[in-house]
Length: 371
Image 1 (cartoon, rainbow, N blue to C red):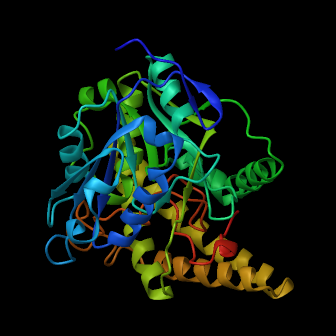
Image 2 (cartoon, rainbow, N blue to C red):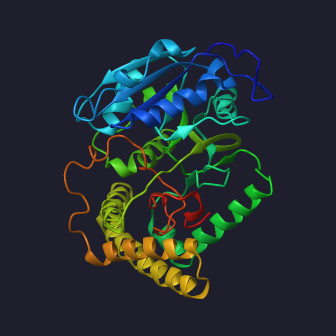
């Protein structure tokens, strides 16, 4: 590793040594990629992210990013790669193979850099501590509200804790601390949310990148799991922050479809870690927790008749319906190819059983189920 060079990032002293490579996978969402690049154009982080690779999974069917975005207008190098119909994991791996940064920043296309925010501290954590393989920033919603950025690996123990509402309580406490400006120190976590993560190139190469056979909705959790097995630390760096829209303006039917695939992804992950027996018990518990959450949110919506509680109740009800319907359709099609754009694909603080891979956020920032 090159010797780090001190440079100010978002008003603080940093050890970031450029270049850092940013990889964005998109699927027919050119405006989101444009917003991301525009937010970075005038941002101090533009001095450490010296190259951006945009992997377009929707070309040509969903349009061509190159028709909407001009690489020459940005102060950093922008490379566009076409990867139509391929898996999200394969697209991330293609992007990584096409850039040379010692630190990779893997980002959804609905992430933006805001004034005063920076990915720099997460990159610094990797450069300062060679044992750190994955470092995540604190994600926030538009307006600055706390967003879940990491979590525990799915397991029977985690599902039991979810049924006891431990995940909800933990999220509420973290959200309250964030609102008071108490961000806390760097801490070790099981997995880092794939919406935005900084990854050591050495770690990424050792693990051979994302697993193309992994279910799309579990790619970030699977990568963190394999990093753990290989001895790499995974950390959250609260001083690093980016805005994540988590724009899931989905109908109840869309939420049901998402939930079915999500249930399958988590069951698949537990089976991969602990075997079929544990996976079967986990599946029962996660579905029971979904029904429990639906009942809870319905009661809350009946007591506090606000738009937020009503939206949460509707979202929880759709998830519970998916849980009751069972396995039908939860992994329709090639799971690693589904929704390859990576816009609302990773974990959040949603109503699905507070585990590593919960539901997408409602469209309105005020409607987050557990903000």
